[in-house]
Length: 234
Image (cartoon, rainbow, N blue to C red):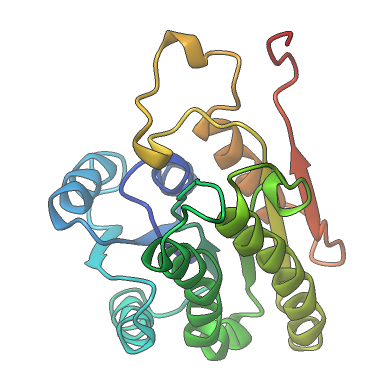
């Protein structure tokens, strides 16, 4: 049975991906910083796959903690086949108002945290000739006002993902980056509502993850841009 590790998986895209993979027979380790939310997510996921979900509280900014997550995942499930680097945050303000702490948090979680995730998992993924998926954003190619930190992190993530695809491809590891537009999640303290029905839904990204895993090993969709098909008229 294959095993996936998903960061930032207590809600939103990460949770939806975990749910889809459990339904498709995967063992799943989910991580997040909030222990209450993480354990609640694991309890709901285990209804679909009893004993196949391992929750571990982890801050992706802590490399040693991420190494321990990989160790515990392999100890429980025997192997690691998929890494979905999903954890992310956003702070949005003009550059003269953006604080040093806000800049650091966005870069450290959205970019350095993904580096730590991949580095921690690489040795185990080499054994299984596995797959890495990074969850980027269309903000990784489209700058906008107040997006200095977020754009920088996602532009960086796009370049990082494509570079490590070249690094890891000789080891049989496929790397894809998924770049969604507007998604109906709790990102940046948003509360999804009926007004968000036009947006990409978390389960849409989860379906895309499953589809990528089902691609023939000889084929690598390395960069996938995803947009709402019918955004509201401006």
